[in-house]
Length: 123
Image 1 (spheres, rainbow, N blue to C red):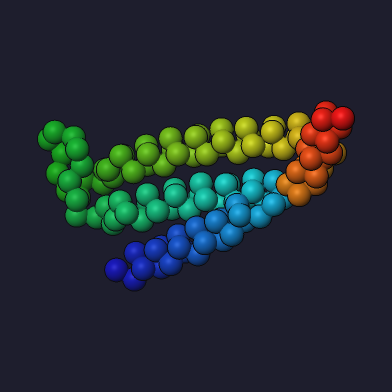
Image 2: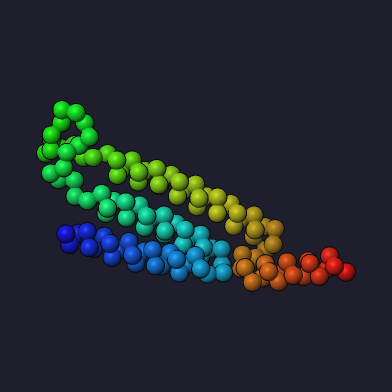
């Protein structure tokens, strides 16, 4: 039970830090926030799956204590890792293109640049 509480506290702390990072105006911090949130979700899935000892596996003919672990949480976590890697890769590419095109990754500077472009278009 204490292992579950430790996992829950760690997931809560990681989620809090990830949300704090995502709410910043720098895209680099947003990128780190998404990576941390992805890992927090993976840890949450692992924590919710519980202790595998004494549980039956979903294989006909196998009983508890046979040394086989339920593969569903592991499959979900593997899928989540792949999806999280894809999202982080996309954000990293977006961050790179934004830096190449605008030479900044700060949202305030991008808004100021957009406002200047709008004023120039109006004139």
